[in-house]
Amino acid sequence: EAGVTQFPSHSVIEKGQTVTLRCDPISGHDNLYWYRRVMGKEIKFLLHFVKESKQDESGMPNNRFLAERTGGTYSTLKVQPAELEDSGVYFCASSLGTGDEQYFGPGTRLTVT
Amino acid sequence: LAKTTQPISMDSYEGQEVNITCSHNNIATNDYITWYQQFPSQGPRFIIQGYKTKVTNEVASLFIPADRKSSTLSLPRVSLSDTAVYYCLVGDMKVTGGGNKLTFGTGTQLKVEL
Image (cartoon, rainbow over all chains, first blue to last red; front, side, top):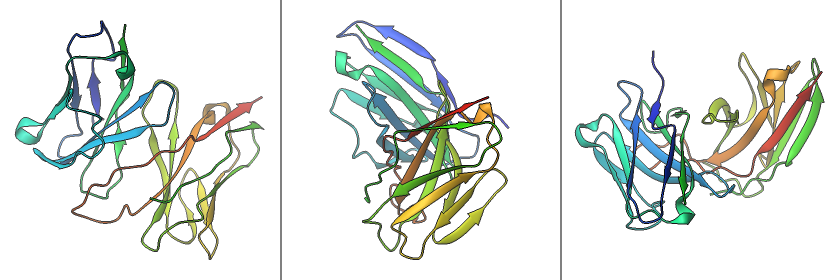
């Protein structure tokens, strides 16, 4: 069974540009989460989807971040416009049910220059 | 969410048992204790979860005293491949219907040497 996959693995963009990160959860997992670690700090929760609905987006830092999960399968996280402080590693995780074990992807390393 | 405190780093040798203790003085009644492992360039990976007493699986044991204000992850006979960061998380992770966001602390960097 394939695990959670994320694309790209690494993205380097200039300040002010737009970047879209993609996450493909484990097939059949209704719950999808986004986390990030910025500037060597702790891994922080961003938001949680249940199927295509946003269950909790309390961790989204500001309106430059937009997450979608159309159709309840893969999810995208768009940063527009990117700022220097957005640099870090963005992780996606999925779980079968809310409260079940979360399986993490390898992360996307975003570098904003 | 209960705050957790764990050592920043630990060193060990292959074949030894490693015990990593986590303090969570403000743990709530509904909170579970969960440990994750993270290798460089990978996402965190679930190791074990418990509520009280002792839980054991094929990779680790989790000891939780009666007051639940701390917990100890025990890794038997570690190998070089166990070198990783280990996170202790405390939260109400068995609920349904609500956001089940995980709250990571700084973790413990375990280094295993020959």
